Image 1 (cartoon, one colour):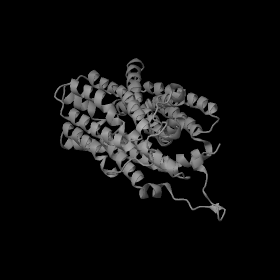
Image 2 (cartoon, one colour):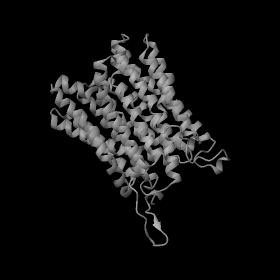
Image 3 (cartoon, rainbow, N blue to C red):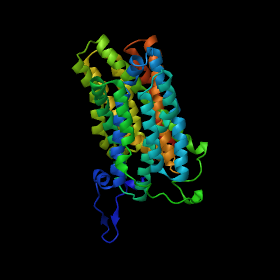
Image 4 (cartoon, rainbow, N blue to C red):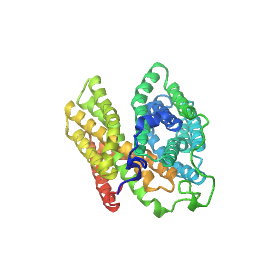
Amino acid sequence: MTLPDQVEPMDPALDAPVPQVSALRLTLTSPLYRGATLAVFLSALGISAAAPQIASFLVNDLHASLTAAGLFYLTNLAAPVAGFLIGRRSDRTGRRLGLFRACAVAGFVGWVGIAYSTQLWMPYVISAVIGGIGGAATSQLFAAVHDELKAHPGPNNDGVVAVVRMALTGGWVVGPVAGSFLAAQTSLRTMLAATAICTLAQIVPLGARRTPHVPAPAPAEHVPEAGHGSPSVRAMLPLLAFTGLYVLVYAGEPIKYAYLPLYMNGQLHFPAGVSGAIIGIQPLVEIVLMPVAVIVARRTGMMRLMILGAGFGVAANICFATTDNAVGLFAGQILMGGVWGIFATLGIIVAQRLLPTAVATASAIFMSSTALSSALGGVAGGVGAAVIGLPLVFLIPAALALLGAAGLAVMTRSTGGEL
């Protein structure tokens, strides 16, 4: 079955294709798409700057134990609940951008509170209560972009989503380096305050723009995209299954970032430059492959391509678990770039198509998968490192990715390969 936005538009007078506008040009010429692209970059820049430093802040500034610092990531489990409630509200009212701004302000307040915490319990409570609300801002942007794309269908609509998603990845490329530099030059509290500023600044690119193309309140049957009613659990089952499989594949990321540097530096004794190059190659490969994934998916189907991506994850983690040289670890990281070049681009599109009557809810549930993956990966990696040690701990994410690939294959068959 050919998806509507893959059909080349025809000029009825000439019976010939209408010249296509590239996804990049569509993004740059639309105030909403352009603003969303800049907004997600700023959001990712701030969050990724803080992510590698938060444990150091808890240990060095608030005197937490290493175990207590690790448990901080369990506060991410509140994010799916907050995301679902906000997404449901968005689908009922259609106020995507209004909720986006409210979430961004909440995120700003949360990061300021963490930056100036004086007691160890404070960051945990703030992250659990407010962090999930702030994290829902990005899902509201993707829902607003979806509304605009649906109002203006075209063959490069998926490419617009890919461009916005590339900006999110770009923020994660720059953020850790910028955060480390700022923390070294100033302090960890200043770096966290800068994260708060980036979180609030994501509002600026969209200005006072209102949510586009969402009808006024009407009965649910007349408002397919803002349904003024919650989707049933049965309707959400495909989305929940897909998100769960995504969590299995993504769970390898926190394990890798926690233990691959320890393995390279502590056991293999790589120079700092080599270790940095190995870590840094993945996001570069990911960004290059994102537009390629959209093109290939139009021919193969998104779900089929994601099965291949999960297979890359299996192979990558096997490389980490069985390799004791730089070449093998580079190969693993390149394969991981392939995983996220596919999943990061196509995941949000598939999620929205699995629950088309409630795209904000779908976006929020799917975007919460990273928080769930962090919790799963943190627990699995900690137990695995204690039981089987390094580098065999990477066999755990290899097994999880294999389960994810098998589940995606079953979903692909059940949908007839239409996604």
